[in-house]
Length: 356
Image 1 (cartoon, rainbow, N blue to C red):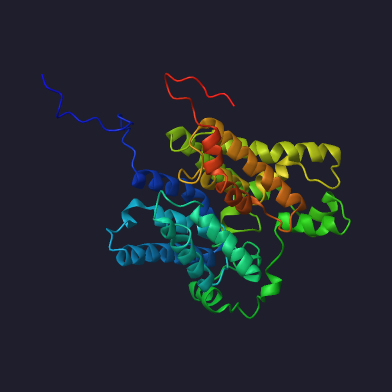
Image 2: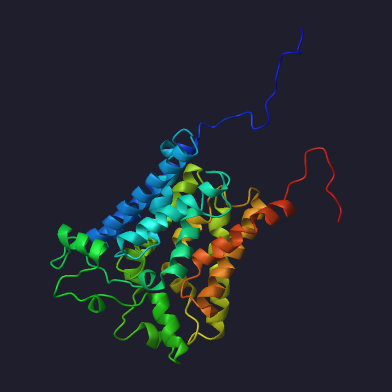
């Protein structure tokens, strides 16, 4: 029997049935509970921010495909997921143009400029978030207090449109009367002025771990509920969409130094639970650092990557110029992924490890 016409493709030779669109769709579903609660907590303006950002990403994706004369890629759900992740990093009352600029930057500069999905160096949603924060700090650091969707003072659809598209609030709700600092921002501002952690987060501010974990928290749309975000992340691990290595090591990379410094001086450094349930640590660890394109491929590399993201997050939160460090930490470590992959490559079967 002649084997001259038999061709053998490169590995892998076994397909588990997963595809890009299914993976992206699964991640979107994992984010749905926390996203729905965010709309319940912040009202219709948050829903408009999500819809505008997702639409901006999808329209930009399609425009680039037309310009490049390529087949549409909207069906792989990657643009929709990028838009959702970006929206979850934004304040609930972000102006419409911030959503549009962010969506265009995420897809155009964060993804398509490199050649599209699979070629981008940075997580598109996070690099856009960093760009927006540096370019428009006032719009990205104005945090409205929760305004539940079905409460007596809830915004109507017309009021929500006025807030997002013209910045006009109801006459009895001035902007400065319905905004306050995030827990991380409050902690950093007050402790820098000599207050203890207890004094900074207590009193009129009234920080509560129960509220933080359950959904009543000042912050970005995606910081609403640590419990629902963690549940979505654990569901993805169980389904095999991601593994525990990056989220687990990133959480430990933040919580271990937090525990050390808290034990050293609890009046200046908050406890590890505070770092866990506030800010974007949970969504960053499970949904952003685990991006398959911008994270290492080996288990050892993923552990190094995740731990480094966590440590940088704590450093920036504690001593950096911004209250939150998750976005910066992951984007910085995205640049180190090729180096991590190079030095954590497994030995090819049948070869001896190279000696250095």
